[in-house]
Structures are given as C-alpha cells and as structure tokens.
Image (cartoon, rainbow, N blue to C red):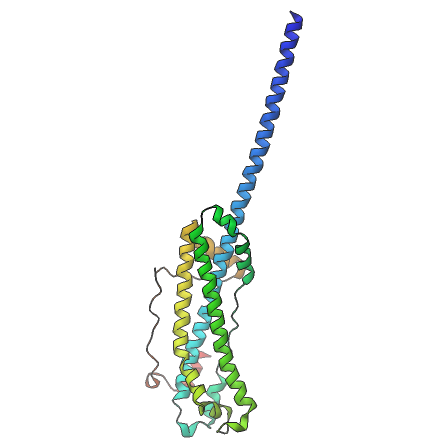
Length: 267
C-alpha cells in the first residue's frame, strides 16, 4: 500500500514538474515572441515617422525656395523695367546686389535607404499602398532636387560666364552686361513660374504625406511632433485632397512701389 502511494506521489511530482517546465517554456517562448513582435511594430512606426518627417522637412525647404523665388520675381520685375539706356546706373547695380543666393536643396537619402531596407517587412504586413506612395514621394523629391539643381546651375553658369568674359558683353557694370543679355533676361523672367511650381510641389508632398498617415494610422500630430522634436520646425499640413491652383498673374510694375520703398520694407 505504502509502495503504491509512494509511486503515485512520485508520478504526481513528475507530472507537476513536466507541466511546470512545459508552461515555463511556453511562457518564455510566447513572451519572447510577443516582445519581438512589439519591437518590430515599434521599429516600423519609427521608420514610418522618419520617412514622413523627412518628406515634411523637404516640403518646408521647398516652401523656403518658393518664397525666395517670389522675392526674385519682384526684383526681376523692377530690373526688367529699367529703361535700356539706364542699365549702367548705380540704381540698377543696387538691384542686382539684392539678388539673394540660392538655397541648397538636398533631402536626407539615408532615410530612404532605411525604408528600402525594411520594405520586406512592410510587404509582409500587406502595406503595398504605403510602399508605393512613399516610393512616389521619394521619386518626386529626387526629380525636383535635380530640376532645382539644373536651374541654379543655369543661372550661376551664365553669371560666371559674364564675369569671366567681361569685355565680351556690352555695358559698363555687371548689372548692365547681364540685363543687356537676352538669355539672362529670359532666366529672371522665369522666376515667376518657378515660384508657382515650388508652391504647388510643396502642397503635393503634404497631400501624399497625409495619404501615408491614413494608410498606416499615424496621426498628423505624431508626425509633426517628430519633426518638431528633431528639427525644431513646426508647420501645418495642407488639408485639401489636391493642391490649390498656385498660378498667379505676373507682377505689374505699376502696382509696385518704387524700388527703394520696397527694399526698405523687406529689410
């Protein structure tokens, strides 16, 4: 009897030990798997915030470029309306001196690389729309960066060509030599359309970004907080489903104050 009781007690202990060990393994494995999934989710969210924050920062830079082209457009309006027989005046040279230097435009491609390296994870989650939309954003950002670079190069190349070949161009001053040149006059006349294009592009980026947010359920506030905390820049997103029409009529010289009044207000 005692032998049977001892055997029964032994089997119970073995069973409890087995169940305890199995439960411990299950809990350990389950916890590890849960923690791994939680970490993956946090990493995906961080990557998404980095991507969308990068797009917003690029849009903000484009806003700055558009504002600068608007300044150049007004300045060009004054310069192009100087009578041809007055291009050698000090007044004309003063206008040229106020032409602002070009802003450097370059988006952080390391963020694009981080996203590219995590694409399989996004595919596994079924976020194909998000992948395509982000790809469109990066493609357009790359395109506008190249177009802007080409525009800057075209302007600076012409400016340097006139400076280095001073005697080949009519006029006594640099401003006169430039404004006697039809290529230069055409370039600065194009500042108006460039300002419109960059305003439109910045709006387009924010609309695509708003779509990104809806696709992966990240709020605008989270993205803007991420941008603010990392770059100390805060800007509201556009709310329209398509960019507004940024086309505007060309400036009329008769609607502008005299140059000295305008430049004093801008300084």
